[in-house]
Length: 204
Image (cartoon, rainbow, N blue to C red):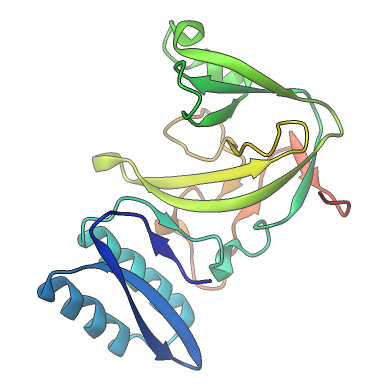
């Protein structure tokens, strides 16, 4: 599965490159389409293609890019982890459609003083409970740069995905390194850098 970008005015465009098919989501405007097609023509390696595609998508007005199937995400995507200490899952606001986020006590301490008024506790991950990472997103944070949004599920949480501490803008300490797509070197992988969860051979 190729990287995708979720915007309403985008269409798919595919091309074959080094025996692989790269599917791009680009705006309908001819200039943007030409820029992407030109970028695909001059790219020659999978790593360069991934970086160039993400760069073009950002220029095309796309916001976030799902990179779960990128080579640098393969060692965490669709992998299971065991919870090593109890973790709380929160929801911003009252709407049930709002995202669920794992906040550690350390991260909570750096949030606005009205954290408990804005965030509602919706679940707890118990010690030894299994979670599975299902999605890795390259997320824009305006002029501050970009970060990961890494999502997981657990059986206890009824299949509702929740965000792990992965964006350096939201958490004092993030669980993954490097911190953003701009810091990923060729052949480098996203690595787990926390003792709150650990890899598990058992999976859900």
